[in-house]
Structure formats: C-alpha cells, structure tokens
Image (cartoon, rainbow, N blue to C red):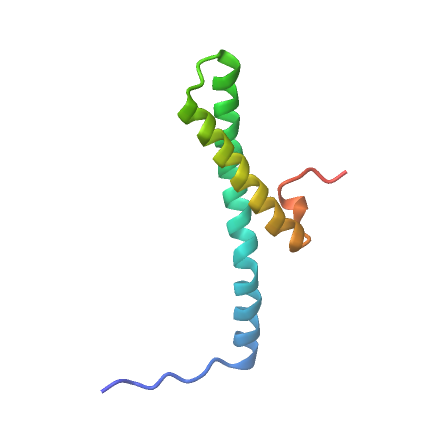
Length: 86
C-alpha cells in the first residue's frame, strides 16, 4: 500500500516554480564557462601552430556552445552573469 502524497502548499509551489525557471539560466552559465575555458585552451594551441583539424573542429564546437548559451542568457536578461557590467 502506498502512502498518498499531499500537494505542496501554495508558498512551496511558488518557490519551486521560481527555482525551476532558473534552471536554464544556471545551465547556460555552466555551459558558457566550460566552453570558454576549452576555447581558451584551444586558442593557445592554435597560437603555437600545433592545432589539428580535430582541434579546430573542437574550437568551433566550443564557440557554438558559447553562442547558444549567450543567447539563452540574453533572452533571460542575464548577460551580466558572463560579461563584465560597465
């Protein structure tokens, strides 16, 4: 026999809804920061002249991830999370 689960109180449901709305922003920041670090490493490799075709593809993919994450943050009005605010 399963114990029934009561619905969340309204205050808890509102808090949960606000938290769930922030998940895409948190994910976008993590993706942007990870891709930016990878791109920086690959840029150093390119400067050394030792970049392979696979490395170049990886750099392009990192730049694509950064652009997509930036678009998510721009839509959310949260670019300050990845850019210096002047």
